[in-house]
Amino acid sequence: MNDSVASPTMGLFCDFDGTIASADMIAAIMTEFAPQPSGPIISAIVAGTIDIQQGVQQLFGLLPSSAFRAVREFALARVVLRPGFPRFVALCRERGWRLVVVSGGFDFFVEPALAPFRDNLTIHCNSLDLSGPMMRVVWNVPCDAKCVGGCGLCKPSVMRLYQGLVETRIVIGDGVTDQRAAQQADFVFARDRLLGLCEEANVPHMGFDTFDDISDELERRYGEARTDD
Ligand SMILES: [Mg+2]
Ligand SMILES: [Zn+2]
Image 1 (tube, rainbow, N blue to C red):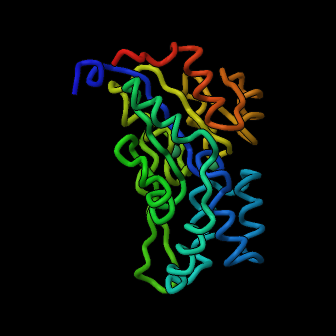
Image 2 (tube, rainbow, N blue to C red; image 1 turned 180 degrees about the vertical axis):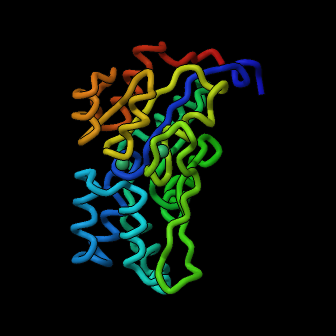
């Protein structure tokens, strides 16, 4: 490890569902396994009438633990990565930037989907407790004292874990669950609902469709990759 890796650098905090993965895997799982009861809960989460932590626990509480194998197989068959992701990971690695995947989703689909890139990124996500009759969410990074609470997996708290390790913080995401993290970022790459939220809140941002859009912009801002090392 050389000096430039140890010194403060850029941190890219990247959502998984709807961002790295083209679709929202939690929504896909619920549409497949609990379409009727999950609909109103998902609507309430999006509308902000229940917090994310309560909502996601209610969703997985609809599923018997015995269904886990089928749920995992379904998720792994469904997950599709957004174009340009391998180049984006390579760019971060070349520059010594920290790529941190911050997902309100679950290890059983995030980890296998990102296995080819595992040496070049860090993952924070949730797991499931299958010891009871119904699934129960284990929140691996709960809200710290500085957060108003209710996030479930708290993205701003994850960003604070990297204080002192990164000096510039970039957030990449698509939804309401990225909003609090985006408000703490130096710059945001946003799509879908997060794009409108960044516009409303006057957060410095750029829209994106593929990870090539993000890599192009990062190279424009921070220079083309050196080819002499
Ligand atoms: Mg998302
Ligand atoms: Zn929080």
